[in-house]
Image 1 (cartoon, rainbow, N blue to C red):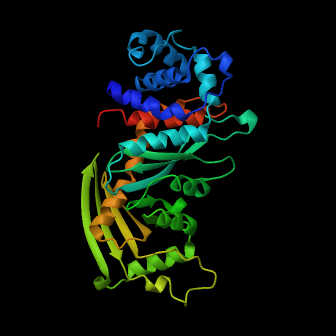
Image 2: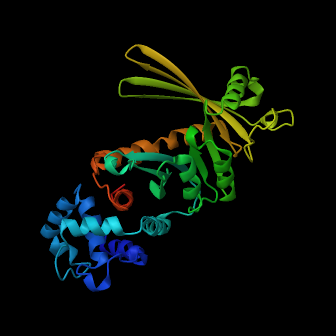
Image 3: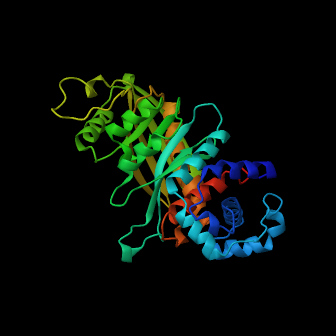
Length: 347
């Protein structure tokens, strides 16, 4: 990342209020943020390693900020990151990412990840679980939302969606997010939804399953794709139907939830052969967009990019699952720092 881009990144976090009493501040907040960002990008996995990296690269850091008193201790770095307001920190990150986005619509995948070592059992604190919005084509984390204690993704996803600029996008979510409230929020943000539906909606899932088992070929748009890698062959058969009036008629059973703007239902059948063993699975989807089979196949594959291009990188490159931060807003703030740095890496 070029020097000018670094200053721009730090400037985006200038809205943060220093949580310390001003007369006690020895190391300015921008200097702490810069060394944490750069140290983490360089491979440091904890604050001791960040401090050591900063001491070794002090001349480099002074190209951007004074560092008149050198590098803060690892305890100071830890205390400040724990105390910085997590919601405002996330908002600053979102504002920076907005400046990186291209104007064209994208496929936005919503998915959650748990940082498994951030629990504090003695305090009854569960591991941090963050829901991320991943712009597949641009490879950007558009925003993140932490799940509240004793809550789950169903409550966190609408909060995340309300902060994002989604106009023209197609938002994909797995079965956890197949909720009428979430579908309505996506439409209100000017986007379309593609939601996986499983046994969490048993009646709806069963009817869609029966429909595709005996659907007239004239009602279906289909496409087949084949992939072969890692010793396996996978054939995926995609089918889309825009005949959905029967799902919203007055003859539906009483009290059945209605998904707003429903325009298509879809199915993907994956047949995998590995080491002479074959398996088959069918998955079903609801969409407010009038999809064709080619766009549907592309969107389903793009949804998994959040796993192999974001979550995998967080664990393997930034050792997210080994992070032991367990106090204050520290776990949430460092979980935001890592994908921030992902945008700085060469594509």
